[in-house]
Length: 56
Image (cartoon, rainbow, N blue to C red; front, side, top):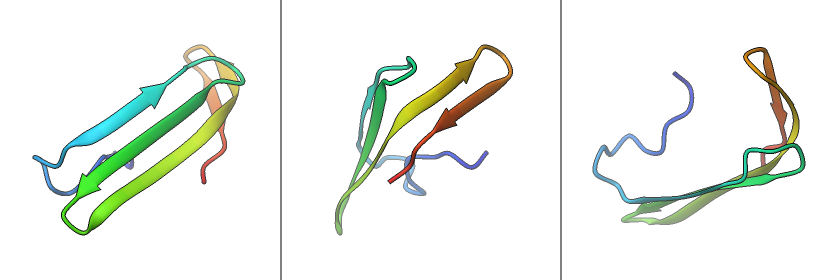
């Protein structure tokens, strides 16, 4: 419930994701006021139990 790309339901969003330990993710929200980039690295993945990642 806390992860969303934008409050604007029609806002274009670019997503790049490598869901592996050491892999990176990137979400770019393309808004009228500019682009907003969020990115990080997956540090730990325990299937069905736990995901740890960095966040810019």
